[in-house]
Image (tube, rainbow, N blue to C red; front, side):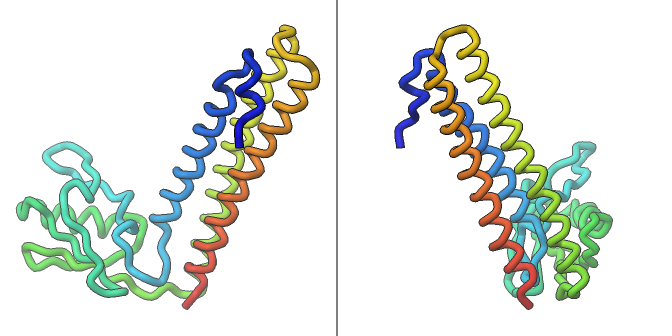
Length: 194
């Protein structure tokens, strides 16, 4: 669908800019969901973990190969065997509650099955993230509406154009919020499925 705003000289590029910013918010939400724990092991569960590598806090996935050979196990193979204990410590002290073990070369991270309580807690945390991202999208909508309002006030667009532009921004907002809701519902189902 072509943007009606693209045809208004004063608003050229506004729609694309808003769409791009909203898409980034949805993509950020999708990335957030990837690290949420479900009943199955996933290498993304370790996404937020950083390891002290010679004085620099480095993301784990830059220091090691991560695999999930089984539904309840994550295997971490550091590229540099001398940091095995540092990696194990970083995983152990993370907020995930994992109990990793190593054999000097490879770290095995058993992923215990989630209790009903943990599942509900995970969904509650995701719900908060959903709201944060929806608020972000609404703030982007507000920025767009202010741009349109200013263009109308400065007589760069007509009242009809202002109305059309605001409707278009609202449609875009509704579409992006719907995408977030759909991602959330799918992830919630995945988390709550035993």
